[in-house]
Length: 198
Image (cartoon, rainbow, N blue to C red; front, top):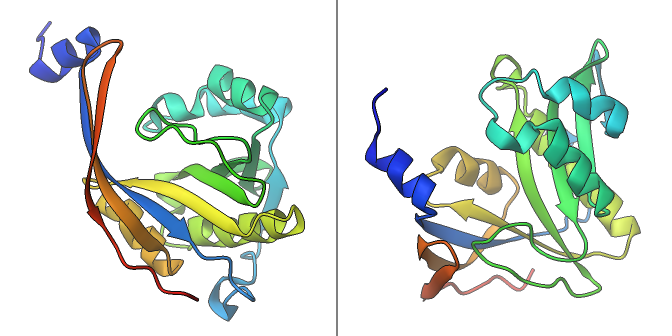
């Protein structure tokens, strides 16, 4: 067995991340290109009956483990999913109470929501499913009185930022998170961005 430096860092609880705190703008209307769910697909709210099948997914890491999904749903968070032929091909989450990351713990105000963990199966990518699900999330959040939406994009995840750009999202600030070992955390804000007013 080859023991890598990354493995040793993970085992020790060490973590270093550079990330953007992002504001996602609630649109007046969904853009035409993302308004229609593709033929053969359906958008649903996932529940316990769906989460078990996600345990068979490969490449999505712990984000799709049935145990974690059930835990999040039990905490009151909402998971929207896209199905094709009755099988889940994509999902995304939102939370109303607080962020769901150690990178930037923050309570949500009554008009705020935190969006996180969008994932689309590799074979289903290139069909704008993630963007369509995100806009559908916005519509749900609008009915709940949530008009200020946030998410996090890790700097190294360029695909995530391209996704956010399609949504017209704005960077709020750039931050570094360091956990040298379990129980000890540091955060530094390196840059703040000017935000558009609309």
